[in-house]
Length: 486
Image (tube, one colour):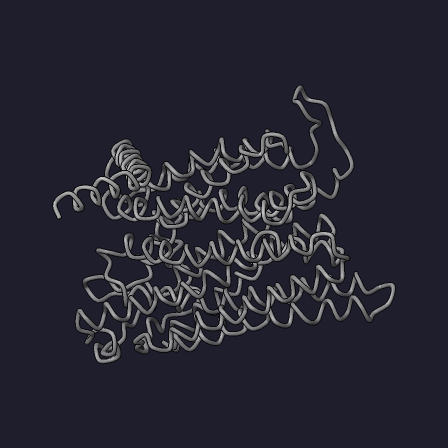
């Protein structure tokens, strides 16, 4: 039987005044402004270049893509510990500080081994590199369940969709700067030898890690209360989400989608760097800066859509849209590179919808409902394990395909030979379509019709784009009229 914490254990949060709650939510938002630098300075070209210069193989690139998902299996014991101890914030700090600080070790140890370990230096350096990435992702898995439950108490349910969309949106300017600077730095040393490129990437990792630490440190000022959600047997606690049909269908669809997208994402970066021979700045602009600018326009739209129309309609619209995006990478070539920008931006817009919908459903089920009952962190952990096992298998699957088909090509009526890249992109597109069917089975009684949600999204995006395009003209007209009036 579930045991809900006594009311006094929630005093630190429940006693918050509206102003105090706003301050707490503002601090959570500020933390992500630092976190966005950490995440986007590391992503894209720096990690790909670093891994390539160490000597990472195609299969190991697939393994690299699978690492976050494999480590997420530890969300289950972390969830149980968070629910039984109530120490959500402590687990968050214990997991996330190493998650950030170990990037400094990544920056220093594998390059040193590569230089000093002789003829087997590359093999050993890659092994240490992959092991450290795995431990880094373990930290994320340990800290996440408690964080989601903690945030469910901090952020009122009526504004969660808009709040977390807005939080991500406010982190975009710092994310764009971080991606742009890291790409520029790498291009400055593009013709350098492998050792110099590795040192440059190491410098980027160290700076990013410091911003990541500031992200986590900011949460020390966010109110927290110990909450022991359950003293029920472990299997009963973890089995609760699996008895929720709405949750099961949602997670099944999400897992197929994660299998399709996770493995492909790493090979998109590799395709741009190795196959198209793009500069680091171009890679950053395609996979990070362009998508981040697109998110700037759509994040509020997804938040309002989820709050107004429901999570299921948002998930269906986004997943269906991702099908042609996945297949579109087959047609990307260096002489019409604009297609890569378009696909990356549209894919980012749609994946944002998937991510925000998934996050809001899990945090809703994890939080305390109006009757005082709590879903606990089990929903976060089980959802994380389901989608992350799928993502892990996806990374390993696509990595194996790339390894087996490396060096082979076929003519298939396209303007270019078909390689393992095109096969990966095609398989990913088919799997994205398959992911739609379990989502159709998910029940969400409070959700509005999907077509209504689609019309709302289309209208909102149109207004946002038109507003952005016409803003300079409107400002000019307003300034002219003010000058005339004076």
